[in-house]
Structures are given as C-alpha cells and as structure tokens.
Image (cartoon, rainbow, N blue to C red; front, side):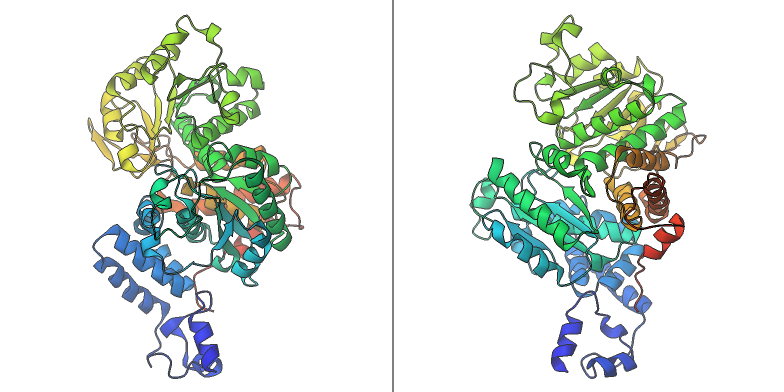
Length: 543
C-alpha cells in the first residue's frame, strides 16, 4: 500500500493532499501519510493564497504557483478561479517571459509536457504516449518557441508558453486539466546565449529548417491524430517563416488552430468591431495599417480580410483596404525576402507618387491616412505624437492598437494617445493598462489579449466535437466578443475586461459550438448545444 500512497500523492490529477477524507485515507493506503486534520479545499486555498502573498517578486509568485500546479491541479485551479485577474499576469504574460529566460536554472519538473526532438523523429509517437500516460487528451498546445512575441527564440525553454496557455484554457473556460498536453518541438535554437549555456536543456545546435523540419512536423501531426483523434491541435509561437505554412497545410483536414495567426487576428478584429460599435461606423469603410509584418501582424490582416469578404466585398477590393509596414517601410510587390503571408498584402509602387519615400511609418501614415492602426512591431514608442495627431486629423474616431508586449516594447502608451487625440481615439493595448482620466472622462482601456478569445473558442470546438475550424466560426466568435461592449458609456473599452474572462468564455463557447453544429461540422450528434457545452465544463472541485 505504500507504493499506492506515494503514487496518489505524487499524481497532480488525483492528489487532494490534506483534503483526503478519513475514509479515503483508509481505502487508498494513506493512513498516517498526512497530518490528521482533514481540510476543505477552501481552507487549503486560504493557506496557499497566504503563501502566495508572502512572495516578494512576480517570478517568486510564479514559482510558488507552478509548484502547487505540479502537486495538485484541482487546488491550483480552485485558487486561480478565485484570483484570475491577479494570477493571469503571473502564470502567463508578462511574467512567463522571465520564467522562460531562466528555465534552465529553475527547472524542477517537466509538468506533464511531451518533449519532441528533431534529432530523434522515430521517437515521436512514443514520446506523446509516454507524456499522456493513458489520459484522454482533447487539447494539445505545441510550440517550437522560435517566435515568442517580445523575446524571440528560446528553444526548449519555450515549453513554459504551452504550459501557461493550457492553464488559461482551464481557468477561463473549464477544460479538464487531465485532458490537455503541452508539447515542445525542439528543432534547435539560434539563440547563441542558450547554445553557450552549460545548463541549457535543449538540443545544442542551430535550428533545423526545410524538409527535415517539415518531416518532423508531419510525423508529429500523424502521431497526434492517431493517439488523440478527438483533440484540438493548437500551434503556438512558431517562427514567421513556418507558422503560416504549417497552418495552411493542416487547417482544412484536421481540427487545428494557430493562436498567433488566428487567435491574435480574431481578438484584434473583435476589438475593432467593438470600437466600430462605439463609433457607429462600418468595417467596409476603414483603411487598415499594420505596423509589424510578422506572424501576429499578418494573422490580424488575414482575419480582417476574411471579415471584409464575409461582409460582402470581393477579395480584390477588400485587399485595397490594407497597408503593411515593416522594418523596410511599406511592403511593395518587389520588396525582397517577403514571407508567404506578406506577399498577399503588398502594394504596387505605381499607386504612389513618391514610393521611394515610404520607408518609415510616419511617411506611410501621411500618404495613406489610415483609420485603423495596429502595432505588432515590438518597436517601443513607434506611434509618436506626430504620427498619432496626423492620423487623428483625417478620421473622427481613430482606432489605435499598440499591441506589442511586454510593456517596454509597446508602440505607445494609452494615456498619451488619449491626450494626443483629445480623447477621440479608441484603444486596445497588448498589456494591461490603467484607466485614463482626461477632461472629466474615465477611459477604460481594452486589452488585446488572446486570452479573451482562445479559451472560449477552443472549448466550444472541443465540446461540439468539431471536425475543423473555418472562417465562419471564427467570424461568429469575433462578433460575440466584439458585442460585449457598452456602446453608450463615455470612455467605454472596446473589449471586455479580463475580470469577466470566465463569463464571456462561456458565451464564446456557446457561440462557437452553435456555429459548428449549424454547419454540420460536428463528429457526434448534438441536440442541445448549450447543454453539451455545460456538460463538458470541468470544475475545480474534489471528487
């Protein structure tokens, strides 16, 4: 019985710690292995939260929460549900960046992740099977960590992104934590600091690209589908040269989703729809400028394009509404080294009288007069007072989203944009922003955080047994989230607050599941969509 006791107490999906009842302790061989008093989960949570509060830095707080996560998933999520606004920036962005950068020094536990190596492709199926340990996996988050927003290539350390993402899925939407699997695809790293670090835990060679890399991805997808045929496969933080290619290859055949492309795209589109609900303007009348043409920036452009087409424009006409600016300035058809995603959003030099001068953001804003400006550039303070005032001079309610994070990389501060536009701008930021008080009005600043969207979206897909995710379902999710704004209140945010995360994740899940069923894309028959979603929801309660 000693082995049984050790097994249960070391299994985070089964462990209740001091909450095991007297009867359970007798049945499970736990007599004498725990202090005598049987605690309730509420007592455990009070005790744990006091320990959390005693930590002096966000990284220390995260380490404490991760240790709790490793020991007892139910208690961890019970506690997170009580403090979701406080915990979100600790377990995920922005504190996760510190955790990734110090992963080698902090490593204690693999946290039920699967570690796939590009150097041993024949081990992929065994790796997934071992990590799953017989669990019924319904959600896989996979990353190769080449393009972590704000910090770049972090190799195997980036597994923390997948783990953190799955925490938010469970806390926000109620996905059963025993049914999720984080996956690190270790293709090497181009981060020399990691390669020269004697403590680095990943493959010590430069990143593998091309056919060898794509063969590993293919083997992974085949094995993942074979072992977990009912799962949603979520791609996270792949490099700009691979992300769109991978998504395009699989999206029409399996249930899959890229958060940096589609997740960022749909939450930003939802923010734009929320802003237009406030300004009472039409999406088809907007001119979009994206500053930063990486995975996120192009994912946003593609999502807006899909919505314009859905709203009645033909694709060629819809593309005329977009201008994309990167390091070299406005992207033209003859700009060298364009990614596949960038190529479809370029402009022809013949459209401009001064194309050779459009080499910076200021010149492009002056030339095209955007009504919507989105920043995914990681170029701090790029949205200058001059640029913002120029934009505001040509549109009544400029929509300005400086989305780069962490804070030090943001294109502008919300308070500055409010002041520069005399309170006219409709703003979403990539990181939490304080309310702005200006001319007697309190402006609430929406956060363009993917966590507003992907938990409800993913849960709705899983609960509805969806076969694929298509643009119609994504559009339904955008409108559902964009509709949760107070259009009459002065200074209202364009997106709902993180404090409402669980409530609107449920709304999104219902909307997504209904869209799947309406299109006949569900694998299993579903009569009552809301009941199917409610029945699938996991609650952090001891059983």
